[in-house]
Length: 612
Image (tube, rainbow, N blue to C red):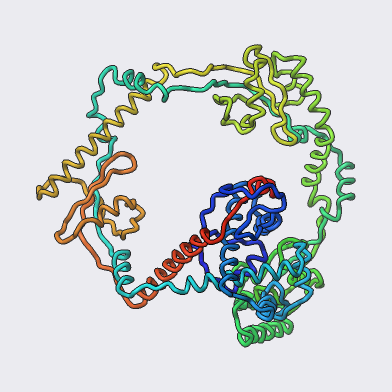
């Protein structure tokens, strides 16, 4: 469930475009506020701009789909409701409080101190003004104050908590006897005309759409590239022209890391730094001991076991900037430290460095040159592909021979879908079901179903829309009807056995191994069955419960032991806090929901659809 109070985090989330899940279940499009293209909604007279919605979506790197727009707009409306009400009842954030808060946001700090340069860089990267950012933070702080006042009111009594804990953690031990439908199939005797009767009574189940099977070929840039010839001279030329990206310098780095908790105090951080400086002196005095000290002292579990060895990396290969800047300014064999990153303090050692040669990247160069040639040829090849299909419409042989393609055969497909990925495209399916293909038995036109990929096909077999014949489905129908009857027999036998057990009769059942479970069920017992087991009073054991299984079978559960919950003070306290939080959250949801009646919410459907 959504955590409402994250005081240190909420304003920064708003800056980064993270909009919390809404308290209020608005239906987008419930109201219409006209046709102003600059706004998507109005809450109590205050408008939510189209740009605000776009910023929120982009800030989370979300796809700009109707579903995402609706969810993000819900969050913005919910936030605006809270801001309106907080303002009306006199909640304010002073300029001094605002400035102090912004200065304390880690994204704007350098070594724990507010950095104007980082602040301005942040604004520039997003195209925001100072006023826009301050307004966003101020609004969210006011909103958070309002929510805090509601959330902090949650309370759960110790008595209620202890009762809940007792229910949640009570453990019951059962063994199970199952009645599988498959065990009863031999007893089923169907009437000779059972399948026909079912077929006649359920005609809609046997309707089938128009279907076809086709043979097809795919012409792609990849296919063309595979057949391109290249010379060593062409490869060398490409390598020379792209040396900066292909022949990057690689450096083999080892490090010793002493981690620092982000929440550590200045004193705690200083202690880690002092220890790191001591290690640095040791490895500088005896470089050969670096690997040994890394194994013993480094707190990077991935590299410590290898003596701190991180392997070869090129620039941009994944190191954080301070680490990379240090690593690529070192000479071979040099030891450098301390390098501080968000992970802690590092001591670096440059073990080796080299440049990739032509031979190192020759396979990559060859693939690139072939792909380049294929791209250049694809336009002309597409034209020829189309011409051959049109001029020799009775066979795919011409395009197969010309481009060395492989002919594939499809499964049954219809006008809406195909199992073959290359055919499962609306334009392709439309071409396959054209009169030319179905009636005249011609090749289909070539369809570019994705950039750089063309497909063409011809009909193997066509099946018009209609009902499947009884002969086609009879075997499956007999199997289905037999299983349905077997399920009935399994349930009936299980219920009869349960009745006998509850009346005190001794009957021979094969009980499985005992299973322990709580009200949440277990890996082997589903929650519906667990619910039946926990309905048993348990005053007299064994006791019996039963349930129908997902496969249509039946299960009887023999309850043999009940273990009461361990309701200790620590568990009661933890459960009390959880219940209080959930109670507060429900109160907050109801509270914000009530604001809908106080502040009119209007949504502009046209502008919402154009929010790009």
